[in-house]
Length: 105
Image (cartoon, rainbow, N blue to C red; front, side, top):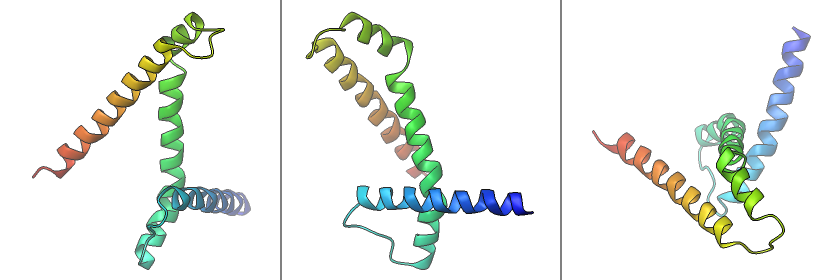
């Protein structure tokens, strides 16, 4: 039982830290109800972890490593800029498409 309480305590502390990060990111908006605050505290850590995993996938895959290898030694590279632009465009397009799909009846 004490192990569960320790893990739950660590989760609550990490979630509170992630919630502060989320609040900074959405400033000046913030939850206005108790349910909103509880939802923020419950989802802040999983959403932060999911965002980190997506970032790792985008910047640490084979294509990104090949781009980095081909442009090593250059401080400014058009290839890196194009890769980042296309990666973000695809990510934003995917998020938009999922949002549209979830919104449709």
